[in-house]
Length: 525
Image 1 (cartoon, rainbow, N blue to C red):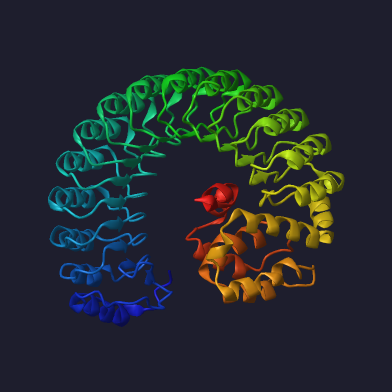
Image 2: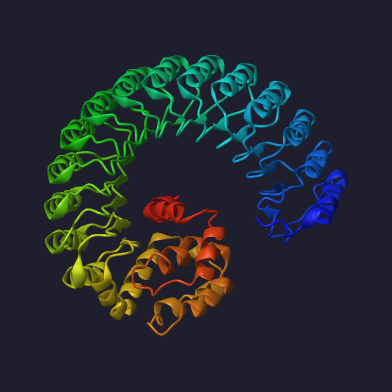
């Protein structure tokens, strides 16, 4: 944020915070360096040089419960003042201090505050130059603190030593349910220490260890721990060099573990060999609902093994196989599996060299499958002929609402010329997918604009105006899914793109793409 509120403006806001104890603060339109989100008890003050004034106000304010002070690179004096406010304030529940480089002094002060604070239960400390010594201070605080339930330490450098200290804390702590240690270079030894803690901890449900060089040794120790642990339901292990043998170890765990529902093993070079072991485990597993194996070089052989498992498995709802070079053969195997599978809602096959033969089999599957809501075919080799097969399939299919974006120039040109058919087909399926009875009468009057008149001449500016007149229910549940995810649309103006990112509270294209790939599953809930 660019700081247009200014020092005087911040001081006025701070003064208001000091006297506002009755909850009268409303949402304000201050978009430069302070924003009020829903609920109105949330304050965001990122990238500002005036944090000290807010810190002083927070010592007495009893309304604000969520505060975002990310990206301020606060001095030790300001950090001290802010954390002193946390010691006195018993209202704040969510704190975002990411991108502040608080270092050792800041971590020590924060640790002291957490020992006495009884209200903060979610804290974000991403990118704060937290090393082993700082991690130890925080770990000591977490042994005492029984309030914090969600702690985010991504992109620091706690290493193996810091992981060991945090593991000791997790053995004693009974409140933390989610911990993010992604990109901390903990290595296999750090993973081993955490695995030992997970055997004893009965509270953590979510753990993120992405990009930590866990390796085969760490994967083996974690697999053993997960055979004992009964609470972890979400585990992120992507980019950890676990290889096919590490995948096999985790596969063995999946045969007996009936708690893990979300498993991410993306970019671990597990190959077709590791995939085969996982596929056999999936035939027995009754818990995993989301599985990510993107970037694992599984090829058509691995896709074949997974397809066989999916004919038996009845719990997986979403599977990400992006960037696996499965080709037409792999797409054919999976398409045939989805003819019989009645549980998968989302299948992502981006960057897989799928061509005409593969999309032909997928289109046939869409004629009979009425379970799948999202089929992502972005960045493949469908061509015009392949897209010609998709249009009639989408008109017949009753559930598909998303087929991807960036399908290639010839595909885009064909679908643009057939935009009306595609829009009508997908929009009608989306109406069936969501509870239309919740929409306002004004929304129902608006729907024909998108069903009956979605011709190529309708500009994105016109569509934007229509969206702005709709209720938030229609925007969130219907229009954003269709209007911005359809491959048939022309390039999207930056202003409209920014509005969507802001509306969805997403930061960049990567997070937006991730949202798109899972939108059907998310929207259903």
